[in-house]
Image (cartoon, one colour):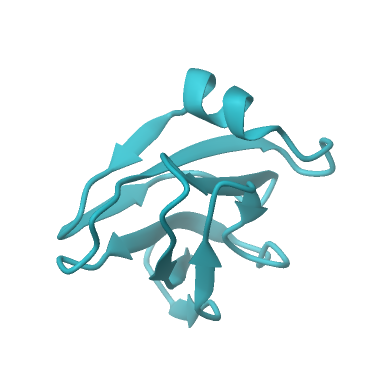
Amino acid sequence: MAITNIIYGTAITVSATPQKLFTTNSKGRLAYRVYVPKTSTVSVMVLALLAGTSAPSQATVLADADFSVTPGTTLEDSISELYDIWIVSESSTTVVVKGKEIIG
């Protein structure tokens, strides 16, 4: 399936409190990308959960994370709109990130 569109999410401040990378999941999402700035001093942890699942705790995201994204790195993961992408800082340090949804 061809990529037909990229939808840019709003910038979010990632902290110790898990939050969704996207406030809504775009129909037709094939994948998403998120970049952690090189200037960051902290990695972020990413966990995909079925859309509508209750917000996880920081401990759950840290323990069950699908990915750790280190400063200066871009994560691209193929996952549909059926999943919410939860993101959390691995410490109390915050970092601003912005995700992209790849639509097909």
